[in-house]
Length: 514
Image (cartoon, rainbow, N blue to C red; front, side, top):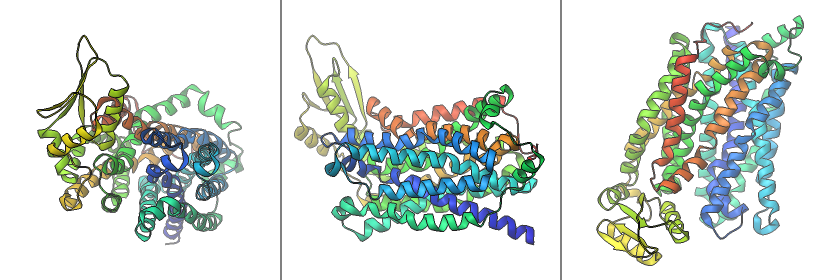
């Protein structure tokens, strides 16, 4: 009973702090739609939003460097105090975002300071996850390692859910202007309270027994970075973990949660309240599957569960997102089928790019056809209707006549249909994410485990996954197809399926104390 209580306390203490850290990190992404106008020059809303997404991505870009920095510290000095440092850095950086002046107040320093704080968040998260996963795994019994570490895997989703709940509560308590003016700061300032709770919890934890054993025997690595990345056998494992597992896992995670929310709000134009609620309900429904798939991986292996998730996601993404469009904004779905939009021009110049941006911002798919003509031409066809120039009023009239909606009407939304499809997306996330911590910690020896597992995880999630919203948005803008953003996660998931299926060996029977 004592061992069960100890294991329970370790899981709760590690997971709760990590939930708060993910909450801090994902606040920015959830509120990115506001930051383009708050922290960047006005004049081009799409450019401002893309800049906001790029700053969001900057936090992901430095996560691998945080993994190297804090992974080295964790392998040299211990797991406990390392992820105590990371949570302090994360909490303070997040709170400072809530105090940051806007572009109108301090000009160019606003985006600079925002980027610095976002980079600090990324560095901290780069050290947090590996520490928590390693710490729990090194306490877990062999036959329950997948189950125990899967609780850590729920933290990213629960942190995301917590951020949605706090933001939704703020937005419902304030009018739109109040929230845009100052209310958006409240969720960031809440992190001060979460930081105090997290530090209190972390201070009560004891060091990992495997690390203490290694320390007493004098077998700690003197240079975890060198041993992780200059010794060919271990470097090979790092690269296989990245391209054969975490890259695919990363894009499946961000597609199933973050990009799904982005798609509901920015493409289907579903209001924030219903978007948040449908995502939140789907997260609540599907989160238990993280633990279920972690437990299943203790029986059949990590590799089978993770790669099956990659396969199912790559097959199902486009049909599921088309279904979300059908249930979430049926008027838009019918208009795109019955009155497709096409642009014909001999060469896409400034007015053509403006037209593409205009339609993409509205969430409408279109085809671009380059035709040979003796003079510059630009025509817009909406079903059988044709416009010979880009005039916003005439275009809006034609779109309205064809039935293209400005936004999704709440009474037209099939909430059950959308929630079911969103829940399936999160179940795919649970398949690839539930067993990933156990897989990574089993792949590497204790003396360099923190460093070696953190790096491929944060490249896969921070780079392949973190830049997904920016890459997907760019693909949609370039092609005119609202589903084109899905080509990227499908390609990466298939890459991991092939490489992981061929080259990665099962890890569930690996010993942890080697």
